[in-house]
Length: 305
Ligand code: CP
Image (cartoon, rainbow, N blue to C red; front, side, top):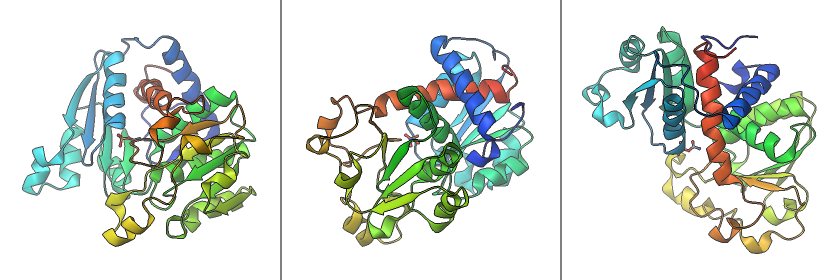
């Protein structure tokens, strides 16, 4: 098993053993975050779509490893604005950096970039498709809070149609005998291709529209934002945007071990009174992203094995 020079485009690009290995290395970084083992390397972060956590945690991770960072957080400041193609942008950047981290609104763009680039590419989110590094930090957060990944009841709540973090995490959790509880309005149900993966693994899933129904049954509640930017019809967004809101008063009869995750940013789907409860884990989850991204950069650039 070696992740050296590998691309990470889909969560399925790595095996279960490789996912667990990334989590183990991330735990080492959590215990000892400042390890300048990549002082001679350059990491490019190309964000064609807005981000706070993913870009900054990748850059924090690269900094703590001693690597240099180049890139852009707004493609309108790059030559994309002059009409440069993704092909040409990636060709150029892959001669300036040892690793490319890329977010792009188009599904499949990261896979395409990996076919063009001479250096490894990490997908930091491609449209509504996948967000594999978020998935790994979600797995890390689940294992850390529950002490295991196997045999858990996990609720996914909100925009299961466009939420790329849900798609990646569902695929990953299929390897751990998960029971899935899917809470969403009818218009935002999990796509059938993702549900098929659950069926192929002979696992159970249950669908709900009422969030309260699942809160006492599950170990993890994975909340998501309704992805306004993916809706073709703004009226449709208005119709569903408040369908699944978690408030503090709903958190009675929960299991003691239950934790609430959210990839963030949140809009209104978790009210702020939840933040002070022992169930809230979303800010620590985002912090875990630094350790997981340190592990990925170090493994892919060969500084860890
Ligand atoms: N979780 C996540 O992808 O957040 P950002 O959009 O802020 O990167």
